[in-house]
Length: 83
Image 1 (cartoon, rainbow, N blue to C red):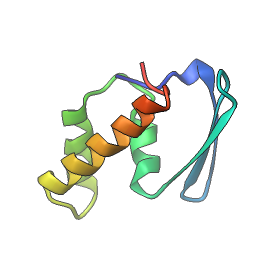
Image 2: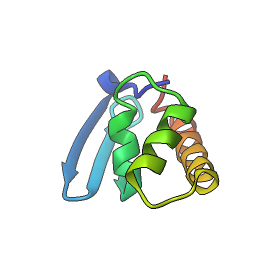
Image 3: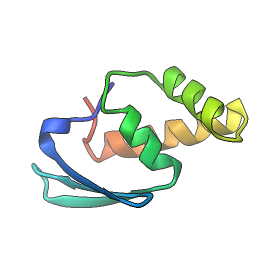
Image 4: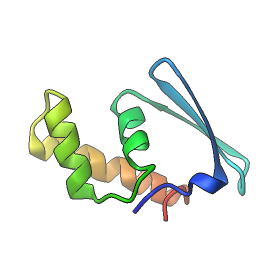
């Protein structure tokens, strides 16, 4: 999976990423670890790879990271921001 980058306009200011979906004209604000996940999703990746990166970079256990990553990815899918 990866972001539909050609269909998105993004701007990161500090730790917040503002995303505009060009096909739907919907805005999204992403903060905190979500900004890092959004960066990682610019390239083809998997939930397992995302979880491993978050566990390595943040003070979080695998189960919590997996739950949060899966929820984040599901929200992006619902918004049709992922391939």
